[in-house]
Image (cartoon, rainbow, N blue to C red; front, side):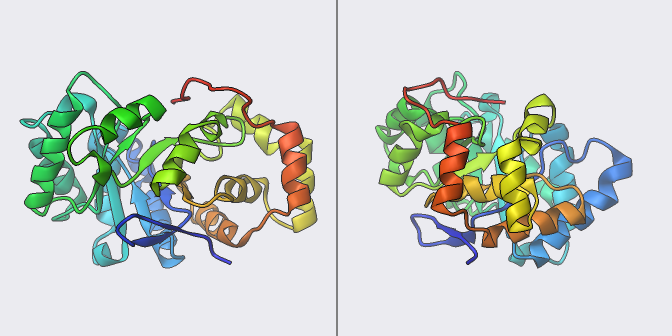
Amino acid sequence: MNRTVTFTDGTILPAIGQGTWFMGEESAQRSQEVAALQAGLERGLTLIDTAEMYAEGGAERVVGEALQGRRDKAFLVSKVYPWNASEADAIGACERSLARLDTDYLDLYLLHWRGNIPLEETLRAMEKLQQQGKIRRWGVSNFDTDDLHELLGEQRGEECATNQVLYHLASRGIEYDLLPECQRLGMPVMAYCPLAQAGRLRAELMNHPVLVQIAQQKGISVAQVLLAWVIRKDGVMAIPKASSIAHVYDNASALDVVLSGEELALINQAFPPPATKLPLDVV
């Protein structure tokens, strides 16, 4: 079936991309990380998401190496620190990201989270970067519904291409109002940590009896169940990190997994959807 997500400008991408958080931190892992990203591109996971924050530019360097001779195959996303998002500083921050990524442009540039710089100033910086050809589109990350409405009230705010937020089975708060609002606007949601961050919570998900049973019945991994669940709704893309080729193949295969109504009902019983507005989860 290969689920896809369509951006407002008509760009269509597979509903699973590649995240790079925690890449670039260990030089011994670099060749494996590069190979994993390249394997993902070959399997059609064309969106690669990174940020100047990740390993303080180290992840961008890994991505740059992975994209040597392959830049035209990738939809490249990076993110700017909130304190670098002023009209004066964003140009330089973007240029430093481009240098580390060894490319002339980003397909998408995101404000990593809200800081003290007025949104109107960040939007002016984004417009200037577009005019200079350094970015094709811009968007935001970690914006709750109120933040989004404030953004849309700004001049050119409606040009926001996406909102990247934490979303996984154990963190469903966006389903109450943020996700429906983004769907109404036709604004794709990019789910980071779709398998939950490594640690106790992820271990609980991976070993949950309901999820294990569904995975066994379908002959797939629990991770594939979790990814298929995240992208079950229109306009939602998952960006799991995969630092091994085996994980990349597992992720890519999840694009073809369809959960039945009965399976989704079992999952809802185990992990109920939100009944009220919750603060936006961030990691």
